Image (cartoon, rainbow, N blue to C red):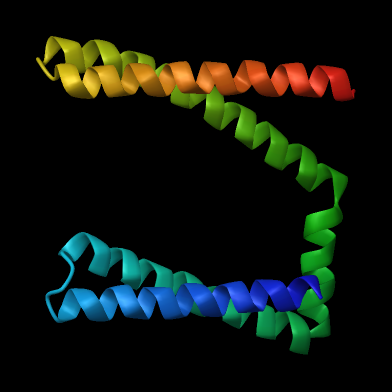
Length: 133
């Protein structure tokens, strides 16, 4: 059942991507939306291929289920998210200073807001997880 919903979601991405790409080709939308449509088409096709391979190939299904449920892989995914968050904050903090020195005040402010949003999200998640565990 869960896989059927994901298949339908992939079909929706594919259709939405085709619509955006088609509207971009006829000139109704700009190239940003046309590119977004191309990306959605790609995501829809790749996900559909993965789902059909999952259904047809028992060895692939077993490998995929092991990857998802393995405790070591879960630990590595969580650790990777933590590192990505730390690096994002550090890189954004450096970008704030560099962009300000370059006279790009608007981009510097946007990077500052991104850092603030990450810190607020971190503390919110920390408080929720602290109550849960």
